[in-house]
Length: 306
Ligand code: ADP
Ligand code: MG
Image (cartoon, rainbow, N blue to C red; front, side, top):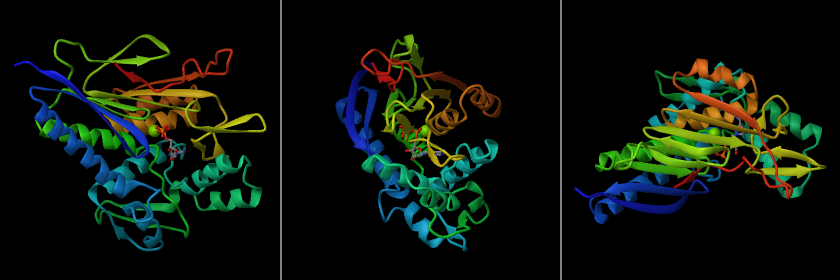
């Protein structure tokens, strides 16, 4: 049976989302990928903090002081996030939403928030302010005006779900990328895996039934008074990370790789290595970003599919 390579690209969750599959017939590839993109759209509708009516944003309004039942998908992501927060003393923390909003404002205005505004946002952040009940599949928030933000975990999870959808449609040889997240199913025909080009690893890597995620200060940042603040928040300062750091994580699935890469960027070297002991089969590397003479990062970019 001759398998052909088919490649699609759409924007989801604000980023290019290429999907590559091997299929016997074009209609099969089209049908499967359409289902995979729809699955991601449905997750985006639940988990986006940009949409006023997302399940996530409605939860932030309704769950103050009372339990609110949520969808199984949202609960799973919050559960994994909360576990990681506890394991890392809040280096990973999806309650950083108010601080992320301040970062976005700083990017717009070129100014850091003043102290009072920053401490107000910090008071509304902190993973201990979010409670989860497995029995009720519900969430309760301890204070008003909290903002949950799944930007460090939802894309990886969405890739996992999309891959599952492709498998259901009979296409296990598939690859999905969303920004810094790459999730692979079975290898292409006659290949050891999907070849991923990474600027800092000369031979690239071959990925199958696994995920690789890159996080750091090279893609999204704002520079103020000569200091670079990345879009990853250091929950201790409440500001964007100022270390020029690049974290890469290989893991069995996208949700693990995505959330651990964000965490590794916050923890830095050598603390990030601790994650390898917490999560079996995970590989974490943290490096300093190097720049060429025109200020472009040499090892910065997300992986490229080839
Ligand atoms: P990318 O979005 O480029 O793939 P990441 O996976 O590292 O990068 O996610 C960064 C996003 O995670 C931020 O835009 C924000 O939404 C969220 N975030 C920022 N800081 C934290 C943190 N300390 N813990 C959890 N999520 C965070
Ligand atoms: Mg991440």
